Length: 299
Image (cartoon, rainbow, N blue to C red; front, side, top):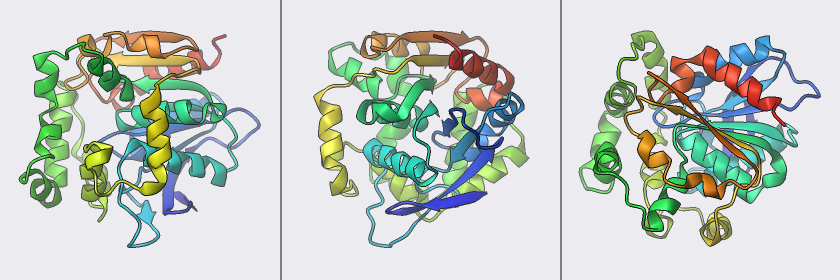
């Protein structure tokens, strides 16, 4: 594990392969997970001669805030700012950005706010920021999707915070089982992630991430302009690939195909992975890596 410093964080990250003049892959994990989610995919990208970096998101794993006074914001604008500064610290001018779950929304925000830094964008499972934009236009999510998002509602209640603080690993294990039904993840695999979720700032970042920016006391004031920019219009001009697990228990396929592709102005393609759940990169590393390498060479 390596680390670099940004304005607010010491970001821990894993590398796969060796730096070169080729465009690197920036692999962004989701919730509740950590950078080890990309171990299988990263190894296969490295075997193909590519270089990839996989950071722990703020509040997770060995990533740490530098000051006790820094806002523990989990807002997507803060996460995008982290990744911009992370790229700067590693002198990465442009990258193929690949994100799953939280990482998908972070990658979308990067592509919208800093398109010059994103060569191509791949999102795994759903469309993150774009789902809410579509729903705001009056396209109603299914009752199944609303039911699948129960944990987000829980975090808005007085019960949510103490439960998250007392048993983050128990919640994560339950969500893994529900979101990727039939995937027999090992106790060893999960134990490493559970350790990452024991980060002292994890609960604060998670609670912030699921609050509206104007109702989040942890939102960082320096991200206000970026938030306004995203609110003014969501448009992705970079080529985009969506990988969708058809057994995903939280990003249900029917509600991630309600017109989100209209926001992608640089080209868009969706690939369905039958029998696969939410954690595609963990469940199908060979297939995900193959699709990413194919996407890399698409014109």
